[in-house]
Amino acid sequence: MTRPGSAVLAAALLVVVVVLGVAAVLRDPLELPVVAHLGAASVRIAAVQGAAAVLVPPLLVAVAAGLHATGRLDRSAAVWASGAAAPIVLFLVARLNGVLDAMALVLVYASSAGGVLLRSLHRPDGRPAALRWWSVLGVVPWGVVAFTQIGAGLAGTGPGPAVRVLTLVVLAASIAEFVLAYRRRDRPGVATSDLVAAAAPGVLLAALVVALVR
Image (cartoon, rainbow, N blue to C red; front, side, top):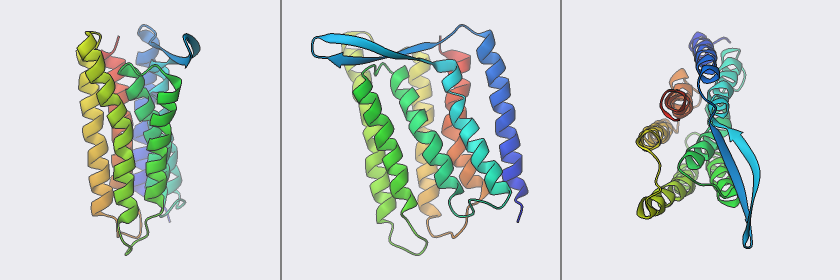
């Protein structure tokens, strides 16, 4: 069974990735270092190329949408899409907001991935407990981002307006994805709109980073 809507979405996301990829190449590099605090010492262990990394979430959702279009991932396409993209989106949002510490970033990634894992445990016509626990665990990475913003603001080293805007936009898109998933929790299959909701946070993050963040 083919699904034209998912095929169109996959193609559209690939176009978005290509266009933003070209724009990312033409702009100045955005290097996001990651630091490990070892006692009194701080060691730089990696550097994420932000303009390239933000293209990964929409690309992963495009793959999930393409598989859904061919009849695969019938009931789990949205979970696979969100599970692949959301942790990366939250990792990048946290890093853009000044979360440098590797352990904190691992916590952000793991809590986001764990929330989506709980979502996968929900079954149609079942109790929504798994989805509620997903929402509880999903608050953790946003809490890390919020407290980092507050602390940096008090120290006078907070993120710029562009990062604040993209954080609020991605947060709104993530909330919308959860609300849609919760309202459709008893639907047996996956609609294209579910995949659109899963793609939205990553697409918005990528577009805003490439366009605004320097």
